[in-house]
Amino acid sequence: MRARSFAIAGAILGLYGLLELLRQTGIISAYWAQIMDLSLIITISAVGLSLIYGFTGQFSLGHAAFYGVGAYTAGFVSKTLGAGAPGFVLALVAGAVAAGLVALLIGLPILRLRSDYLGIATLGFGVIIRVLLDNSHKLSPTLGGAKGMMGVPQLASFVWIFWLAVGAIWLAANLIRSSYGRACISIREDEVAADLMGVNTTALKTLAFVVGGALAGLAGALYAHRYPFLHPSTFDYLKSLDVLLVVVLGGLGSLTGTVVTAIGWVFLLEWLRAVLPSEYMDLRGVVYALVLIVLMIARPQGLLGGSSAKGGKRRATA
Image (cartoon, rainbow, N blue to C red; front, side):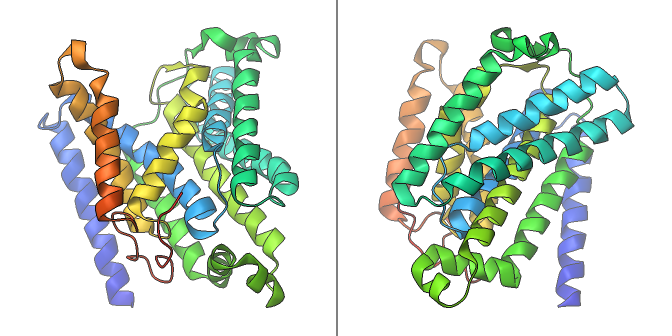
């Protein structure tokens, strides 16, 4: 087991060194380096939703709201404290903690709901957050409101994004393998049976919701420090659907599938932007919708459904 852990750590270090070398030498252009960073940020957010939906079975349509809470909180902290590593670290922590606290406050009442009812409730929460962001300038002019927020220090380098993505995956993998993770999977498979067996379903669903929301907040905090303009439209409910598609396409209960699909999805969309003529840019939606339909017909369990230990038995039906 220890040898396997060392091998994985060595592979991750080697991958980081290779990617950093390719970026520094210009083999990976600045444009594609930016897309790579975005794919890793989306991966962190998708891992959070995988904990909520893929492993605990809580159908959430408001994940982008946590992403937005993290982004705006971190941006506000950085603009208030100014540039610098301590302020940046504090902003990342603040973004994750704020999203986690919001998830806790929202989760306590709505996690009593199940299935489609929970989805509708989280969708409503996402709409509320979007409206609040549109009017956030009334709380503080720094937040920008409907005009968006600008001027956040761009401190999220590749080293920060890469290792925080690795840390998020490591956290999720260890949580899944723990007794808490196995209990979450039992809730996903049959909540009534898990409750009868003595599993504290309310506490564990809340735990998964809070951790997943905090990871989305961390992703939003990184986004705010990597891309110079924040706008409420970036965090509307349609963005929640994008992350949900990543989790479903990767395979419910497959952490590996979530990671691979998140990275591939971002690169697919940008590749289509690069190859399609500007007058046909709207066809991007048609192309990736066709990819979704074909994959769901050929692999209804998801791209890598069943690859994660104890987590891939459920078919990817949403």
